[in-house]
Image (cartoon, rainbow, N blue to C red; front, side, top):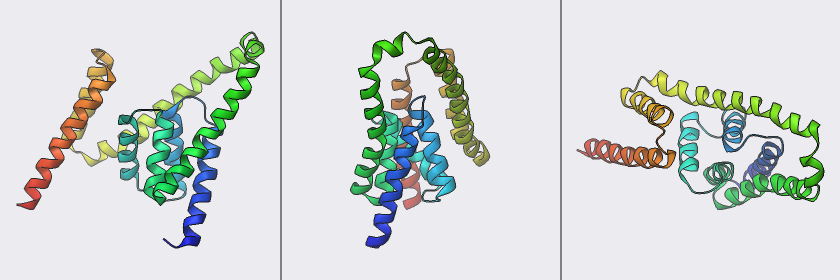
Length: 190
């Protein structure tokens, strides 16, 4: 990538992550959805399948999913400098907002209007999470890969019905994915 293009991508990456992080409420899954819309649908910098892989990496890494998502997207686009710029753009707004809120915590805590506003946002966050699930699940269903569909169903049953800890589910899926990839790679070599 030329230096001019690299600087343009870094600047656009910073502005995008800063904007998304500033106006996103509801946690990492919400910002990851908006990252997908921005970087896959609008800018066409990343393919949808790659974004699914990057989200999986972000989820399985320790730390906040929004920051992890920014790191993997930034690194995919421009390398280490992209990851650093994306981190800065992602953590700067919450840092500033929480610093201001903490100074006025007592006033915010007892304000009924802010309390109602935050409760109303919860409904919007739930809708966005459902949208993420549908947007990320439809391509898997369209592939008609029986194994992927079976994994989706088993994970849902394990988590929702049996209450299995998500950490165990992620570890199991990671191990299964590694074994499956190794077997597919080995059979492709032969």
